[in-house]
Image (cartoon, rainbow, N blue to C red; front, side, top):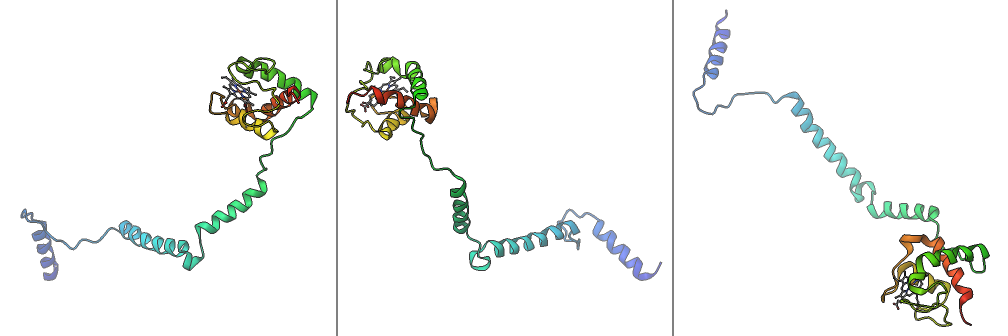
Length: 168
Ligand code: HEC
């Protein structure tokens, strides 16, 4: 064994000897940690570059507008079908009314707990739109909303049933 090797060995023994004091040995950082560390830095720089509007042009508002423009092409406008005068719809509407509305408005719609719906004038209006609002979303003094329960189709059919009953 060469002398230098012997010195190295004895140094090692010295450092191995636990004196109880905290020791600072020259340990290498594990490769995995180094890789992770530099990986983080590279990722961070890339992230900042690609999501900074002034650098990459990326913009949340821009993306949002693009998505909204695409959506408006596929989204159907919320048009409620009108069944005015449609005999089949009126027949169905009568049934729906008998099951759902008659307990409060009576089967002939002339009123009970709820008001008479055959009058020429109603508190909340008598146009298709007014009636739809009244039935779909309800009215404050005890008219429950029915959109969830029966849907817009059936509401329109009930309106078709109510319209000819109106006293002109
Ligand atoms: C729980 C009882 C109840 C049921 C069930 C009910 N209504 Fe009503 N409805 C009322 C009351 C009470 C009012 C009055 C609300 C107000 O004046 O704010 C009313 C108001 C209305 C109005 C507005 C009348 C106006 O004066 O402008 C319409 C239209 C109407 N109901 C239709 C219907 C239809 C159609 C159904 C069935 C799908 C129905 N209602 C079911 C109690 C009911």
